[in-house]
Every structure is written in C-alpha cells, then in structure tokens.
Image: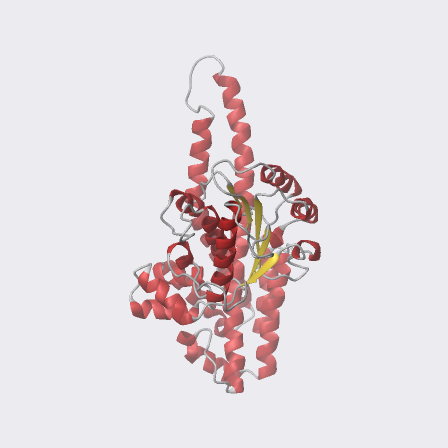
Amino acid sequence: MTRTDAPDAPRTGVWAEVVGQPDAVRTLYAAVRAAHRQVRGEPVPPGSMTHAWLFTGPPGSGRSIAARAFAAALECTDAESPGCGHCQACRTVLHGTHADVRVVVPEGLSISVAEMRTLVQAAARRPTTGQWRIVLIEDSDRLTEGAANALLKAVEEPPPRTVFLLCAPSDHPEDVSVTIRSRCRVVQLRTPLTSAIAEVLRERDGVEPELAQWAASVSGGHIGRARRLATDEEARERRETVLRIPLGLQRFADVFTAAAGLVKLAETEAAAANEERNEAEKEELRTAMGAGGTGKGTAAATRGANAALKELEKRQKSRATRSQRDALDLALVDLAGFYRDVLVTHAGADVPLNHPDFAGPIAKAAAQWTSESALRRLNAVLDCRVALTQNVKPIIAVEAMLAALQS
C-alpha cells in the first residue's frame, strides 16, 4: 500500500493513546486492516502485515503504548473500525488480561533465557479466544544473549497466527541484535511535540491548561514524565532538588551530601512506585497458599508458602533495583538537560530550553562557566549514565560524577 493509498491515521479508540505519532499510527492502522482481511481469507498486498515488529524511539515517545494499541486493534472485533477501544477485546488487551496477548515487562535488569523459552513455547499455541496470539516484549534491549537467541528461533519460524511486538530505544545492535532486527518491520517513533503532550494532559487527564503547558515544556518530550509532573507535587519537588545541584556544589564536601541525597531520592521514588504492588502480591500469594488455615496438612502448606514468599521477595528486590536505576537515570537526564541549556545559552542559539523555568540559574551558570567547562560537566553526567548500565554501584557512580561537576 502506497502512502497515497494509506488510510488516514485515526485519532479515536485505542489510537488516541498514541500521542504525536501520526505517521506510525497510519502505518499500523493499514497493517491492522490488512490483518483483518487476512483472517477473513481475503487477499492482501504482500508485506502489508508481518509477524514481527520492532517499535523504536526515544524515552517517553510511547513505544509500549503504540505496541499495546496495535495489539488491541489486531484483536478488535470491530472489523469496520479496528481499535475501537470499546469492545471486550480492546479493553482486555489494554488492561493486560486478554488470553491471547502476553506482555513481558522486565522485572529486573534483564530478561533471562528461561523466561524467554517459556514465552516462546506459549507463543507456539493457536489463539484461544482472539484472532492472533500476540507476544509484546517491552524493553527488549534487556534481553540476555541467550534470551535473544531463543527469541530469534521463534521469529525465524513463527506460527501462522502469532505476532511478535518488540520495543527498544533504537534498532542499534547494542539494543537489538542485527539478526532479530532484520526479521522485523521497524516502526520509528519520534519525540512528541510539546503542544501534543499538553493537549493530552488537558483533555484526557483534566490538568489545568497552564500546568499542562508547563509540564509538557519541561518533560523533554516524555509523555509519562509530563503526566507525573502535572499530577504529582512530590515529583515536581524531586525535579527541583535535582536541578539545584549544579549551582549548589560550592565545596567538595557538597559532593557527598548531594550524592547521598540524589541516590536517596531515587530509592524513595522506587519504593513509592512499588510499595502498594509489593504488598498486594504478597497478600495474593498468602491467600493462594492457604495462609491462616488450620487442620491437617497446614504445616506443609506453610513451608511451601514461606518458600514461595522468599522467591517473590527476591523478584520484588530485583524489580526495586531496576526501578531505582530508572529513577536515578531520569534524574541524570534532567541534569544533562541543565548543562545542555547552559551550552545553548553560551551559543546564543534560538532554540527552546529543556528547563525554561530554570532560565535564571542557567544564565548564571553560563556566566560562570566556559563552554568547554559546561561540555565537560555534561560528559560527566553521560558517563555516569553509562556506568549505571554497567552495574556500577549507584552511590559510587554518582559521587564520581558530582566530583567532576564540582571541580
């Protein structure tokens, strides 16, 4: 299907969740319509629908949201407007309860080969209630080498009614192996415009226009971040704390105070994000294992419950580590944006600042530092982000970075 023959990008139903990506939505919608015709046994143009897709784009561009919308539209029972958002298939896919759609969200820092083999076995089965069996892997760049090899075998010889949806920051070999990428159709997402993010915050989340515009302007095009800033006062306070660091490093002793504070912020944010879920999982496990029961056999059941609880706590600890790293990385992105804004101010470039509400401190920093000094500080932040991906202990990586920022 040529671009001129492609249907217009819909903006209703599940597609309304895909913010600021009209080209991607147009491509996906055309593929969905072809898939529905294929299920009905009608002829479709070659290549209009394929069994493996790779969604790429910068953080916050909505990779997983686009993939979920695509999955919902594939299972949608409304043949005239697939992706209606109202039918049971659309609702269950979006809520993660559809029997034929398996969503893999890494709990820890990687996706293991054992988990992927189990997933591949499940993907080989025929759909039970839907039209397709769909496997959606968020953060597929976290696949271990063994897991990637296990997935490759399934992608090379896919069952006829199975679709694989992978999400990754880019299609670079460091994120997705060349062999897997070569078997996928790539959907590249872009950073959403500030106006598109602000519109969503106003219309869908009911955020006041002024707050919505501010949150969109300082989010760096990250939709989820914009929503948190617009709806969570503590998130706004954490951001301000981070952005006060560059001009707050007056003495070397400030390095250790700021490092401890930054790591603590990440730990607090991770704990807040996981606390309710952790307790719910533990309570559900206790109930399933017969907690509080009496009578014959309860001792053995209790031992089994304790073992299962320890395994759950192990998974939760791994998830907490990942959440902490992600929260810390988000803070580093804010810091990098500050130094980028200093460089922009030095150059006198007519481009928007990442942190327009910190224009005063940014101008002050630009007056104090040379462009070379600001660039060196920016590189220190980027080096810290790399160190964290290599499993350097957070406090050590952050202290090394802040020492470079203070000097």
